[in-house]
Length: 453
Image (tube, rainbow, N blue to C red):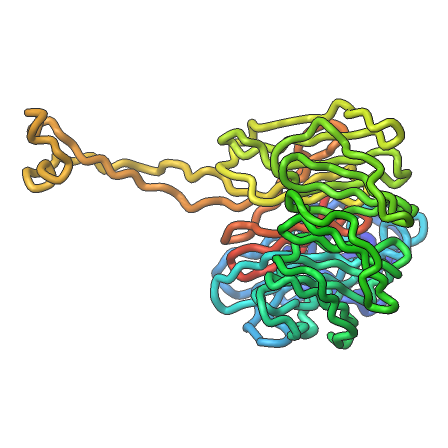
């Protein structure tokens, strides 16, 4: 079956008999892409100037085809490769080309690539997405892996840390990064060359949050003890201490104008600070629990914070505030989506999307019911009951956990997309600046890139 779609260069391509998930090359722009799933691809009417894409060799393997937007995992390499992935479209303009719609060139949502960072099941504790949407960072043990999202590969790790990395942040121009570790050390380094520029020393406890100011000249850091430090990155010096201690801060978000900064953390504490005077403007009241995600709207008028629900069904609770007067606005709490546990949360920078990661409770597959023998009856203390003959041992079989990421629309409180692929507990999430891509890290030793609806 022939599939027509528009390449990111603007040319209309035709694929004849191509299998979903296979690579092909556009003759016009020479860029590689993947064949979309025919059930999800949007077919268009034949038009003039249709170009037939370079032939795609059909697979002769008996294994099922990978889903659209995904290739088979390549062999692991310590410094590069070890990944499957696709090039994302040019995001210099919305939709990848001037005047284009805000949709993927291949017309699908879901997993875009997987980066295997370890041969064993190690935990990827933190991730960060570059503002230019072209690269990302993933912290695993004491290494920070740099991921090229356009080429779908690793470009080498930053190796200067001597303890596990716990927090990451990109500069606004995507050239530099901050990484903090369990010892309280913070490194300022160049992403392209993985070159250390300066160590920032001031914390004595694990670093929990990092953020650059919108102009990239300053940064704010937080540790598990509640210490908040403001840094001058040009001089590599601490210029102010906003908070000396208290409850842990888990999220730092600067307003678009850079004049205010929002911090959220344990005990439902949400505070707004003035950056220039390094003073507290006031707390935002109404939230409770350990807040692990926060955001400020593009116009700086609203703020959000979220935490995992205390319900046993793994939902989320979200609060919203008017930053003009500090009023807590109606938002949503939804504990009913049948997750055994919500493990991490992340907002899009403008607060319009919320990601919640967790796992679906294992479902019972079958039961093995058999009589209990006398030796087992002694162990279970059943002889005293006099019902040995009626005693049974029931053994239940359960399916593996399904680790998923739910994408919420914060305006409606509805789940608009569910992403699934990780084989271990998801520990970290990060959304791109435009909110159309996300990166996740898990205990299966992988980081995965996704396209968000």
